[in-house]
Structures are given as structure tokens and as C-alpha cells.
Image (cartoon, rainbow, N blue to C red):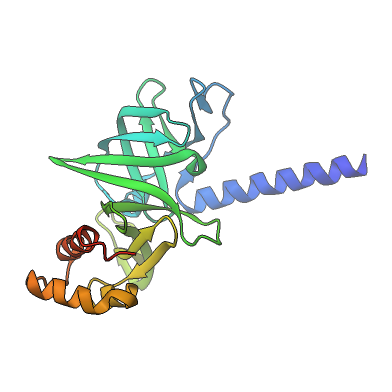
Length: 241
């Protein structure tokens, strides 16, 4: 009996901690039944509601965007309305039939795609390092033997109190930032800057050939576009091993 009481106390403590954290993030939780927590037996996650302040946490702060979602088991969901919450690295979708918001269980996600006008933006779920279990969503800028990924994130900065457009006093601001990574199946994710020196340091055994190749192609690596072109050139010339 005492073991049961202790176990029940632990469960209640975990649930209380989740509710407190959710409320601090502007997320309201409520009871779910088995049907609402498992959309037709396919999509698992948490049903949530968001207040207006939480808009500052999103990659697209002003609106939902059309997209698709692929699970690790192969299930694909098209024609979704989705938002990526960069502050907590979570994916949220809107279910128009049930008229509720759904935070997708990250462990089930293989990738998701935003349709931003004529541009399709693909995000994949990866672990930060091979020896860690920290999952994160990264945008795939280029897929090859060595892929270029970007991690979008929002950080909170304390500022002098001010009134926002709704007349509410605030003392923090939220800023969107991004970090770049190279990814290989063997080495996982390696953080990188978008310049030639960083690229050369990633392939020390081929530095001489890479310098020559970049010079011949008059390619100065200093942004996303030129880094993608450089990685493509390296792959075509077998210099990514």
C-alpha cells in the first residue's frame, strides 16, 4: 500500500510540474480522452491552447502555414495547418475537425515541411550528437553526403519594462536566431560557421584540393547559398570523405 501511495504521489507530482510549466509558457491544458489523444490511432501528442503572447515563440509569428508531416513509421499527413514553436522546439498542428491545437509527440516525427509561398522548407528531427539523446528539429538547406542544416531558435532577453501594442507591460523581448550544422550519418551534427576556414577545417585531409577547387570555381564561401554550392562541388569531386 505504501508503495502504491508513493507511486501515485510521483505521478501527481509529474502532472503538476507539466501543468505549471505549460501555464508559464502560455499553454492551457485540459483533460483528454483516448480518442482525442490519438487522432484515428495515428497521431500522438498533447492537445493544447495558446494565448496571443505565445505568437512570439514561433518561426512564423503571425499565422499558420500549410504543410505536411512524416512519421518514423512511414505515415504521412498532408494538407495540415502547422506552426513551429522555435522557443521550445515543438511542432503544433490545427485539427479543423475537432477544432483543437495539437502538439505533436517529437519522438514520432521523422520530418515535416512548410509550404512558404512557392518555396518548400523541410525540417528533420535529429539528435544533437551521436552520444546524446537530445532531439531537435533542423531545417535541411542541402541534402548530400554532407548536408547543411540550420537550427532556428528563439531566446529571451530581459529589457527595461515597456508596454506592448495591447497595452500590457513587458520586461522581456524575444529574438529569432539560427545556428548552422553539417550533418553526416557517421559523424552526426557538427556546428559550423559559413566561411571557407570553417569548411576547410571540417576536411583537414583534403584542404589543398578544396582550396584549389574553390579558387577554380571563383567560389567565396560566406553565406547559405555559397556553402551549399561548395558542399555540392566537394561531393561531385569526392572530397567529402
